[in-house]
Length: 541
Ligand code: OGA
Ligand code: FE2
Image 1 (cartoon, rainbow, N blue to C red):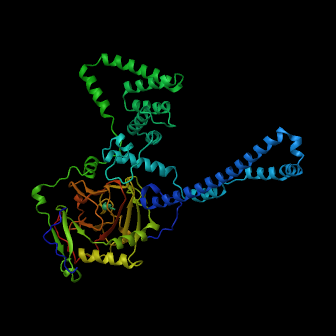
Image 2: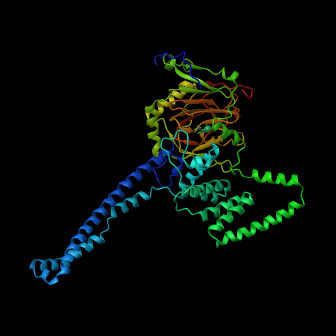
């Protein structure tokens, strides 16, 4: 949103989880992945120490060999003359009796102890298969949300990247295999094709074309493109004529094709046309169903914003004193309108870098995979549609947290004593929270029952980092995208003054494409606001 230049004159202005690495879900948060970078750095240091020790050892052995090479050369030319010298005779005894034994010990000496024990210690913190699959799926999700071409993604040409990185044919093959095990043939095809392309372009790799073609032809067949499946199978058989499965498949494809041809003869031309069209349509990612997915993904890409110039003109920015709150009269804060309906406002420079650092440091050791309410069981579980790590911070444990809570109260005019604790969330690459409501709907009256403070009347969301690409907070119902900006916060009411839920507040955290997203939020509840935000009789006001 715009920030007006006019007013530039500055006025006087939990749940405590044990610190456990048992299962970290690394891929969900960069916060924890940075630890892994340090682990790797440590391992490289100890690997280099090992290499140096091994090189020293070899150097000593080499010297011994060279010395003995010369000596035996001379000795064998004239053994009797050589041994005629008493020192040579003595030295031969000494060498064979002691020195060769010592050399043997040196050859047998294991230099890898330090490195191996370091590996054993660090291995317990390593990511597992689940983490690797999770990270791969995150890449596939990003590819869809941000309409990324497979080749672009493989070459690492992403907007705003600081450290360029690319995928090898082997990596592409791995991604394809992960998609395959998920029965996601759309991505299997894309990534196997990319692996093949990179090999065809001359990339040296351990990935072999036969295996790639095997997966690729199957994925293509599963998506209904028989011609292409057959062409690929033939290509495989050129490389490996004895390949059993491919030979079987080829016969099967030929059989189906001949049957189809027969069937087509009896149908009209237009029918076969529509048939082809449906086949082509099938080539789409089989994503989990979400009614507004298209809108959501468009907004994430910064497309499809629904704000008319006429409405835009009515959005303002101002200095805000928290409705004449004594703390802010002399030092009001910058506030700007992000959206009109629902009203979303953004506060600027509302949390300092130091406060952000403190909040992050307090949260880091407690970050754990974010959970959602399972509507069927009413219990908390992890879900693919919410991929982030979060922690709760109480105002009692740090003056910084309590000061932040107080600030929210002063600026919203709402009582935060009935609010939930401050939630800190960290989204790694691919981290997201698909469209949801923050408030409980009528069909889930028990969601916040145990709190006894009513429904979530309002949401306050601090952005504690900038995000290089992706990671917007979007409102698909109304077509709004709010971009993270470090030090700012957005605020909106989830409920109308009547207490009815405002369905236009449905929102999502878009997947992070490049960078790392830190936010913290305060969910303010109904209790305590009776005189601060009196209710009305009309339902939708
Ligand atoms: C949430 C949420 C939005 C964001 O945590 O409920 O909607 O941008 N977060 O992180
Ligand atoms: Fe939310």
